[in-house]
Length: 454
Image 1 (spheres, one colour):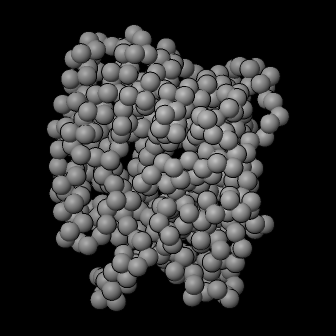
Image 2 (cartoon, helix red, strand yellow):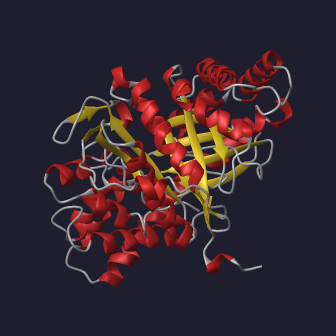
Image 3 (spheres, one colour):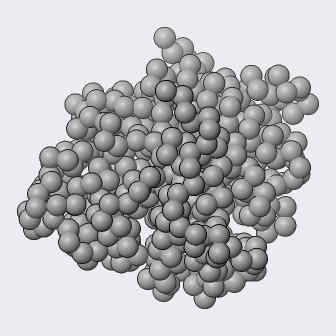
C-alpha cells in the first residue's frame, strides 16, 4: 500500500525536483508487413503503425492528467528496418521511402519520435544491411521524427570493423546532409555494441526480434530528485550515500511501474520493461553532473568522477530492481553532453574532456552521447572513436554507444544549439593524431576469451 507520506513525497518530487516519466515507448513488430512489392510494404507499415498506436498519445495524456505525473515523450519503436525491407528494397533510395513512411506514420499518431531505422551487423553485413546503412544520411535529412541505430558489435561476436569504418563515413555524410540545421541529423543516429532489444530511449530504440508483436516499455528519470536526496547526506560516509541513492531510485522506479501498468491495461498491450536510467535534460537542476557535485566533486570530470558515476549507476540499479520485476533497456545513468547543463558547464570550464568522458563510459549506462566535435573531423577519426567505445562494451560485457555530431562549419570554442530536450553543446576538441591505417585494415576484431561460456 502507498501511504499519504509517499503521495506527498512524490508530489514534491514532481513539482520541485523535475521527476517525470521520460517516455512511454510502444514497440511494434513489422515482421508481418514483409512484402516483395515496395509500394505494398510501405502501405502495410503505415497501416500497421497507425492502427496499433492510434491511442498511444491520448492514453499517455489521460494518465498524466489523472495521476499528475508528467510523461515527457510518447514514442514508437519498430523492428529493425533492414530486416523488414530486404525483400522489397533494391537500392538505398528504396529504403529512404520506408523512412518517409515511418515519419508519416509517426506524425499521424502524434508521437515525438519513431525508432528502428536500424541494422544489426555485429558479425557481418547482408546486402540489405549495407543498403540501409548507406541510406541513413538521406533518410535522416528527409524526415523529422525518424531515429536510426546500428549495432556494430557484441561480447559474443566481436566487432565488425568493416561496419565501424563505414559508420564513420555515414556519420560525417549525415552531418553534411543536415549542415544547414547544425548537422542535427547526427543527433538522431547512434551506434551500439551489445544493443538491447527493449530500449525505450531514443535514438537507439528498436523493437527486437525476441519481442512480442506489441509491447509497452517505459523509461523513468529523475536526476533532480536524486540530487535533492543527496543534499541531506553531504557529510555522510559512502555507505550512507549508497543507501540514499538506492532508496531514491526505488521511489522513482515505483512511479514508472505505476505508469507502465496503467498504460498496458488501457492500451491492452503487454507490459515489457522499466528502464531505470537517470536521463538528464537541459533544465537547471535536472543534471547528472549536479549529482557529482553534490557528492563532493568541484566539477564533473574532476578526479573521482568515474568512481562517483560507478557508485551512482550501481546503486540506481540495486534500488530499481526492488521496485519492478521487469527491468531492462539500458538502466543506470546517462551522461550526454548537450542534454545536461552541468556537463556543458564542465566542458566549458575545461574540467571535462573527450578522453575523460570515454573513461566514464566504462561504468555508465551508454557511452559517448550527444558529443559535438569540429565539422572537419576525418571519417577515420570518427571510426576510431566509435571503435574505442565499442571495445569498452565488448570487453566489459555491457552496452556502449556513440552519438557524435561533427558540426559542419564549426570548430572548437564555438557552440551548437539543437533546441528542446537536445539542448546545446560546446564543440569539443578531438585528438588530431591519425588512425586511418588501423581503421582501414578491415575484417573483424574477434570476441574476447571470456565470451566463450557455452
